[in-house]
Length: 186
Image (cartoon, rainbow, N blue to C red):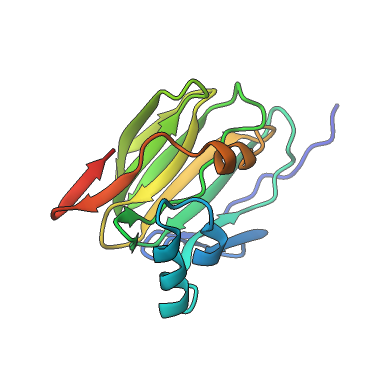
């Protein structure tokens, strides 16, 4: 019989979007987002003006990164804009491209922007009580279009991995902007 791990539970505060006692707590600040926003000078102004604010956090428990296991996390994306562009996560493909991911909206509202390597792009709303299925081969990033943190619960195959490098070099073909008082995708 293969080595097994013990079942466990995790406490998640649904009001604050925080996982108690995570093994991993990733914090991405505005300065970590250089190269992702269209308006680089607006990002630098935000970093200087607001003392490098937190963009998003990810809370995870350590799960073996092998087939048969599932990794899960809580993602908390702050509200705000860089120039006209809403705060977003870096976005990623999975290293094992044929793996999917599920996002469950816990609070806030926004979009999951998805793209295929061919450039096809699709925005799917995410909010409290909405679940988004991201099929294999699609890169995905969260975008907060609301006034409160966008909190989501994510589940994906443990062996999936994250490929951020291709997103940094390729980007996404569409951006989500606040223009003339409302959300615009272009």
